[in-house]
View 1 (cartoon, helix red, strand yellow):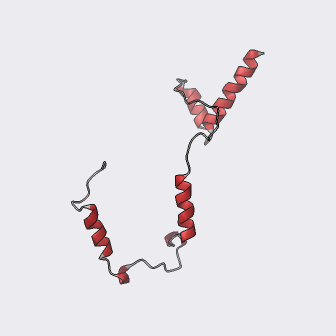
View 2: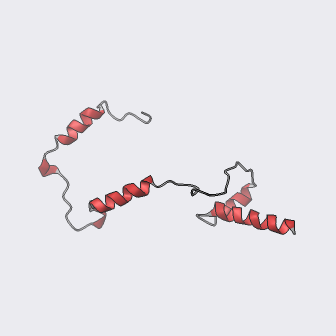
View 3: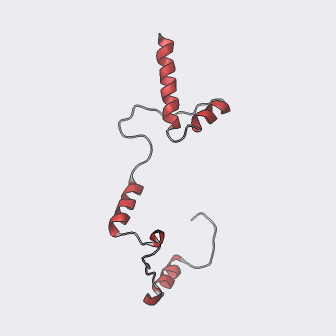
Length: 102
């Protein structure tokens, strides 16, 4: 396992320590701070499903991942436009190709 070791407990020791917490010390939401509210089972399922979704290119896409060197100023300009900058860069290159062909 990578990362820093923060204590000498094994996973089984940690699990046993958690199980040993008396029920009166379990978290109970006070109904005041919505940020502290535990997630419902439905919210947990939705979160798990969202985490499972594959990131990146959708299936059937005709795009190919490459390594491309561009000027820092060009890259910064596209990144400054926010999320989706790679798609906008692809669109700009596509428009250039169309205009270059005549």
